[in-house]
Image 1 (tube, rainbow, N blue to C red):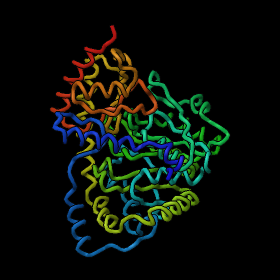
Image 2 (image 1 turned 90 degrees about the vertical axis):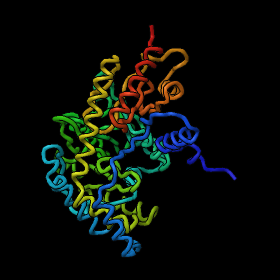
Image 3 (image 1 turned 120 degrees about the horizontal axis):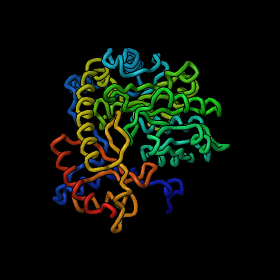
Image 4 (image 1 turned 90 degrees about the horizontal axis):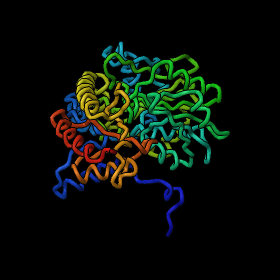
Amino acid sequence: MKTSNRVNNIHYSSTVALKHDVERRKARGENIIDLGLGEVKFGQPPEFTKALISVAKKGVNEYTYAGGTEEIRSVIAQANNSLFGGVYKNKIVQPRYDKEEIIHCTSAKLLISAAAYSVAEVNDDVIVLAPFWTPYIDALKFMGINPVIAKTRFENNFTPSQDILERSLTRKSKAILINSPNNPSGRVFTKKELEVVYNFAKKHDLLIISDEVYDTIIFGGHVHRSIASLSKEAAKRTVVIKGLSKGFGMGGLRFGYAMSKNEKIIGAMTRVISNTITAPPSLLQEAAEALFSKSVRHTLKVTKNYEKRANFTMKRFQEMKLLFAHVEGAIYIFPKVSPFFSKGIKNSRDFAARLVEETGIVIHGEPCGYDDHVRIALIQDIPVLKKAWDKLETFLQKYAKA
């Protein structure tokens, strides 16, 4: 029996594969420093633990509406409309949403696929703004949709331009997928940069799929501005994707949600969900209400720790003469490593493979659209990062081109 070409043409999720590799190395007794998977680890808010136990004792296990219960969608709307209880009053700019404009699903990844599937036929194209989270590509391919990369330039701080976007356009383009705060670069798009993307999408009648899962992890004076906030038209043209994996540090909960002023798109995405997972787990929906209503300050703890790690890392990397975009948000740094392609290292995958073999440092060697950069997740405490950067500095000295 043969497997389908559709499945044969996609890869095992690179992020999941990286986690498995880390687990295998640990099982073999290897002394590794894991900076690969973007998994936020700051414990579980006690309010959620208490709520989960309570809901489990109640025996909540029935089917719910495909897009989530009315209660969870109301709580999500309230949290976002209040900018998470006012905690992010000067850090996030976004529209207000009603519960009817929100759907919940098991993971933001499925919602991204559902949004694309809602406007693209098989063999249609979706533009992906680079640098990008690597699983975007196979998530689109799995739906029979062709990803077309719009590659911004490191030399221009990964700034989207009209020229770059126009070159990525085809007669089959149906949507554009963007991510800010950005995984892997750490960039937070400015209002001007978002206007370039929106004007392009409006000109060519494209849906904007905006992955904003890192919305609360923003540093210094930077502001996360949703592209949907630019105008009423922008809100109507945009699907915003968020979740609890990053800001709340609860990746294993698999809790994503989408928000849009476009009734047709929300309806279409809900039909996709109803015909794939049927509905998200009822137990987790009720328990998650406590996260949005009582545990918002937990996200501040996450953000403050990542900002300290980013600042420490950028200072060390500058001392090492590593080139990178200034980290403005999210949980990664994306250095350019081509100056160290020597002695058999030809690309980012080779670099990552050699690094783990010689130093025990695990990083993400998938290109994210650039085979001369590597993604490093700042998921360890500063003492561990210090040890990692000491090892990295010795490694770079060995492979620096003469």
